Length: 254
Ligand SMILES: NC(=O)c1ccc[n+]([C@@H]2O[C@H](COP(=O)([O-])OP(=O)(O)OC[C@H]3O[C@@H](n4cnc5c(N)ncnc54)[C@H](OP(=O)(O)O)[C@@H]3O)[C@@H](O)[C@H]2O)c1
Image (cartoon, rainbow, N blue to C red; front, top):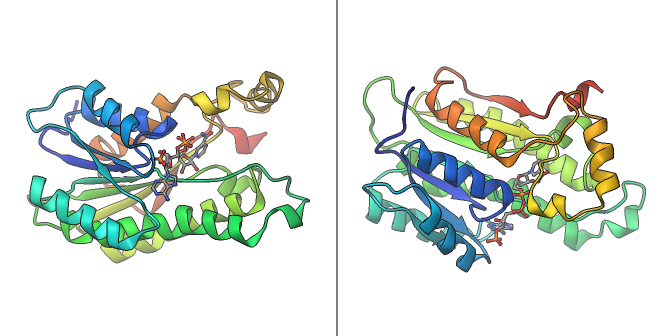
C-alpha cells in the first residue's frame, strides 16, 4: 500500500462535513494536514487534535478562498512551515436551496457568492499555492490538486441552478489546469453524489430516502468514501490527470 509519509496536504473547507473526512484520511495515509478554514476556526483547531498524529504536526490555518490576499498569506505560511505543498484539496464550497424554476429567488448576491466561492475560489487556491505545488520533486513524482465537484455538474440536479453550473465550471477548470500545470502537477475532480454529512442528516428523512432510492446503489455517499477517492488519487492513480472521478453510487444512470 502506497503511503503519503512526508507529504503536506492543504484542504480548503477542511472543517466541513466532507472536508473533515478528507483531512482524517490524508492524515491516516501519512500526510501532514493543513486544515483550511474560513469561519470555523474552533472546529478546525479541534479537528487538528483528532487527526492521526504525524512527526510533522498538523495545523489549522485561515484559508478564505474568496480573499486572494489572504490565500497568498496562507501560501507564505505553508512555505515557511513546510517548504512545499504536495496535495491541495479544494473542498470549500457554498450553496443554498432555491427551486430551479424560481429564477427571482436566485438573486445576484447569491449567484456572486456561489461563483466566487465554488469557481474563483479553487482557482485562487491553485494560483496562490502554484509555486509550492511545483517545487522540485524526485523524478516521476507529481503534486496533486483535487477539486471537489458534484454530480450536479452533469445531472443539472442540485440545490440551485447556479450551484450546478458552478460545479460544471469546476470540472471544466480541472481539465484546463491539468494541461497548464503538467507534467509537475496532476489535477482531478472528485465528484460526489449527495453525501450523508451531518447537514444532510438534519434534513427531511423522507427527502433523503427518496434520494437514496433514486441511486442505483440505494444509499447516499459516505464522506469517508469521498475521502477514500481523494487518497486513492494521491496514492494509486498516479498516471491520471484532467478527469473526473465520480463517487455517486451510479446516480446519473437512474
Ligand atoms: N454534502 C454533499 O452532499 C455534497 C455533494 C457533492 C459535492 N459536495 C461538495 O463538497 C464540498 C464540501 O461540502 P460539505 O457538504 O462538506 O459542506 P459543508 O459542511 O457546508 O462545508 C463547506 C465548507 O466550505 C467552507 N467555505 C465556505 N465558504 C468558504 C470561503 N469563502 N472560503 C473558504 N472556505 C469556505 C466552509 O468553511 P467554514 O466553515 O470555515 O466557513 C466549510 O468548511 C463542497 O464543495 C460541496 O459543494 C457536497
